[in-house]
Image 1 (cartoon, helix red, strand yellow):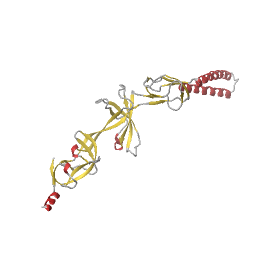
Image 2 (spheres, rainbow, N blue to C red):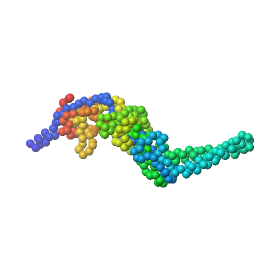
Image 3 (cartoon, rainbow, N blue to C red):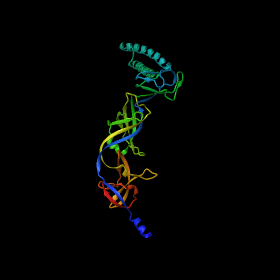
Image 4 (tube, rainbow, N blue to C red):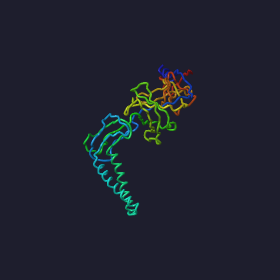
Length: 318
């Protein structure tokens, strides 16, 4: 009796339903996470060391392009201006004498060179003594107070918030499909159901060898200023229709204790286990990718949870 039971066990046949696989066209979408940044962020750091006379803004201050942010010690600028007045007078005298032929070309050229150099110095010192905002934005950091000696860390950080950017990492397989100017829908969990339209501004030309991803820079208009630098966001890209294999979600099994996914195929009346990679999900169906699956294969969509590799099947077509 024992031998008979073993024989019955060996010949166990599992009743299953199958579905014949065919490629179908689906709208491919990618959803990628990123952290938002100010489109432009600038460390406000004058090219002069010395005492900070006055900082005109605080953290959180909104500033316009060209607005005065910092006044540095003015000694160098004032000295240069005094010298400039003196050289300008000298140059005017030399120029008058040159016209009457009383001064050589060499003296004229030397005086003009001195004047031009001092004018350049004045422009440089003025920009670095009276430091102005290069673009409109918000003061995100302030590292000094009035009267302190400046050196090392930037005095302020200025960040743009009416336009944001996000750097997204995209799997290398999509490299041929991602183009500058493509539309991107940016969403944030803070504003459920709200979409912030954006565009891809730069597709970086190299692939990261470690992660097999490439980067793209997304420009996000933000006139409402609802979303802010530092927020976590998702970027969704529609990248056209592709032909792929889509199966019922419950046909895919998961190996316990790991993230490996697999399906069973009907291989001439015998169960064949095949590892798969999951792609995009479409409601109750999911894209599967595997070199061992082809159009026309029969995937088991009911009864698969009881199967082991090699077991015989009683197949019902669906």
